[in-house]
Amino acid sequence: MATYSIGYDIGSSSVKAALVDTDTGRTVARVQAPQEEMTMQAPQPAWAEQDPELWYRYVVDCTQQLLTRPQVHSEDIKAIGIGYQMHGLVLVDAEHEVVRPAIIWCDGRAVEIGAAAFTGIGADRCLSHCLNSPGNFTAAKLKWVAENEQSNYQRSAYAMLPGDYIALRLTGQPTTTITGLSEGVLWDFKHNKLASLVLDELELDATKLCTRVPAVGVQGKVNEKGAGETGLAVGTIVGYRAGDQPNNAMSLNVIHPGEVAATAGTSGVVYGVTDRLAYDPDQRVNSFAHVNHGSEQTRIGILLCINGTGIAHRWIRQQVCGENTTYGEMEEMAATIPTGSEGLHFLPFGNGPERMLQNQDIGAQLLGLDFNRHTRAHLVRAGIEGVAFSFVYGMRVMKELGVDLSTIRVGNDNMFQSSVFAQTVATLTGARIEVHNTNGAVGAALAAGVAAGLSPDLASAVGRQEVLTTIVPSEDQRSALEDAYQTWRTSLDVALAATK
Image (cartoon, rainbow, N blue to C red; front, side):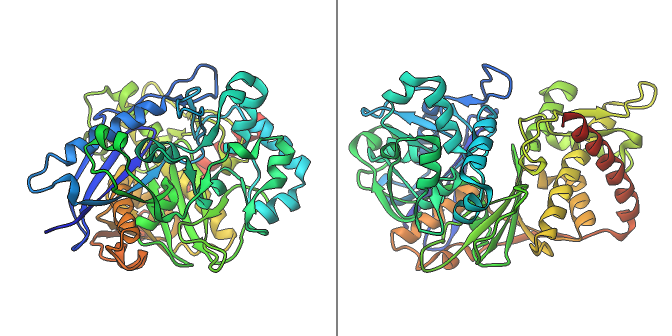
């Protein structure tokens, strides 16, 4: 009898789920809900909120879709894993009811709070202990609620990340992980404990933080309520939980020092693993506990995040091309336009403050538009190139910090399916890009199987992947792409100077 695990990827655009045969590592089915992207609410400029109940509703939807597969029964599902959008804040009360909409990853309301806390703690002290500034992460968002919505803060019993909330709904137990706490700048790496220096500076109640469980291990079991809602069996192990970027890296078998992963979904990320407590003094990139980090084994993920990637591409599809246009059709349009989009270029930074730009919010900008020359296809090409150039900008920062970017592993989804995008990134960085037949939901399912004893370790669980294709730098395109990038970079420098 086959045994299976399910992995969920709780994104801000959709929930994806995968059913994996743990004996063979084969993906039996992948599903998504909803079919169109979820919306974000923006009650004020730079805000971004979503209803956590909506995420859970789509988890239920995906689970029920998977359980309709022939020969798959709920009792055959031995474990589930959860990947989730990082840095969000979900507040629930003592009855586990949501107190207010989740403040999600790209919400910029807490930037000033985080910056003030960084100054108050002291840069060297904060970085050496927490590897990051409180910045725009979960701790600062919780302080914003304490300052601006005192009744919501007082009512809340638990402050949790999106993945913690999904686990709560399935198990009835409020838990979190060291990996998750480090995302919120709430973990002290030097002392291997909660970051009291951050909690004290922000005057936050540490009792609102959940009980810690291992990122890979038995975190809880599906209770009767969770089973009744999803169709899973009571007692199914919740065996894995991590933010989407550590999870994406793990899914691509990026576990050991020197290995690098990338993704270009709603946001874009390049993520490299190191065995030292590394941080960037300028805070253009961030460092978090990787899924296999522990007191006896240092595994830190250095993360470059670009907010305006897939969301910029989607905006162009919806607002310029029309919602009936497919991404494949956009790729065909872009291929008809020469490198550099004949002088049209796009700064794709319209999704809140950009960490790699030191939390400046310069907005998206379209530059060089000529009404007599440029067409919709030019706009599409400029959009793709602008996102690719933002990756190159950030990756050159990572190279300055000593990250080896000679080989990058990516999944067979999001913007890396665009040859224009992938070839631009490969050529300008000199990286060899390996496209693997996996995604975050598949990886979460495989990792959960480790907790249930279905695989001996993470490396064994995710090491059986198929490389679909490899993209290498193009010497023929290098000169034209470098010229276009330098023009784009000059426009970025002007925009940054204008906001200071």
